[in-house]
Amino acid sequence: MATIFNILLFVLILGVIVFIHEFGHFIFAKIFGVYVYEFALGMGPKLFSKKGKETEYTLRAIPIGGFCQLAGEDLDDDDKKKVPAERRLQAKPWYQRLLIMFFGAGNNFISAILILFFIALIWGGMTMNPIISSVEENYPAYKAGLKSGDKVVSINKHHISTSDDISLYLAIANPLQKSEIVVERNEKKLTYYVKPAKIAEGDKEAYRFGISMRQQKKRGFLNAITYTFQKTGSLFKQMAVTVSSLFKGKIKLNQLSGPVGIYSVVGEQSKGGISSLLYLVAFLSINVGFINLLPLPAFDGGHILFIIIEKIKGSPVSPDLESKIHTIGLILLMILMVFITISDIIKLF
Image 1 (cartoon, rainbow, N blue to C red):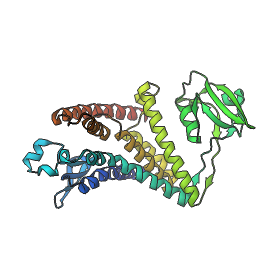
Image 2: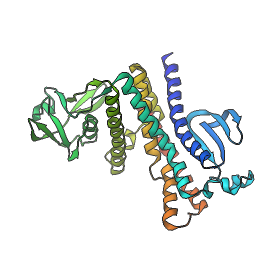
Image 3: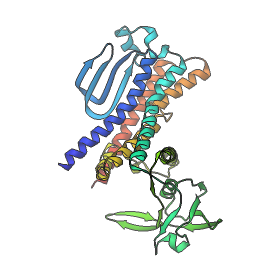
Image 4: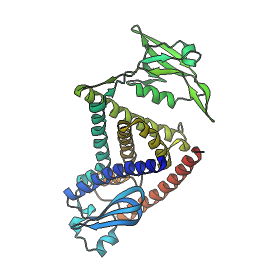
């Protein structure tokens, strides 16, 4: 029964995030008069379809992903359906096309901010001061000299603003080398060099420095605003550092998670109640928005890049060339998703 509940929860969460994203494209396309063929949740065969004044609204069989099909993305389809030239995407000014492409991710960001604010307002928001609350004996941080109450200033030359930053930069640090940790204690800055200890966690190996961060839950409107901006900035920073580390080879592809990995997280988060699930929606929404804005083919960021190139060179990129590039990007993306999914399945066993 628990498995069925988790599956339904997983489908619901992904569906909400995809709806938020695609609705951003949809609403701005409508605002600027672009003809929308279909607004779909899910992929594959149609399960449900309802025709509006001009847009077909569909629910598809595979509950992963979705799309908002706009006139101008497939020129042959536009001609067959006799869509007026002025209703096609490429006929609109560059800034309108850019906003249509951006506000899929933009909607994800706005929804995440609202969800984080709601969580902090109703349940309280955690403080994010980068202060060490405890240091475990017999672990490297304790042996190096770090103490409870130390305020972490930097890790491996990276400035630390929040407790999330500490977790982030320790997570991507090379576990085979000592990390430079600069702390402030009694108004003095002290530098320590710490190499994490390898430990066994079940049948897996992990690395631990042996420190915990001080966090307290605070309530109130102003605290909710503070938490929302701090946590939003922290999540953006995590994504930026993670993507940068991936391209630099500091993070391996098999460390990434896809739908199967997200399903596993949904099961764990559901134990924490509604606030934990809402946080997961906000977290994933920012992740989806950030990834979609990367200037890569098949992503919204790839489309935005072509719009910017067009603006700079003063003439549009060949639609056929752009279409081929996005198709190749989509194929590579599908291959990557298969690899990540297989990796996620292997991690379950």
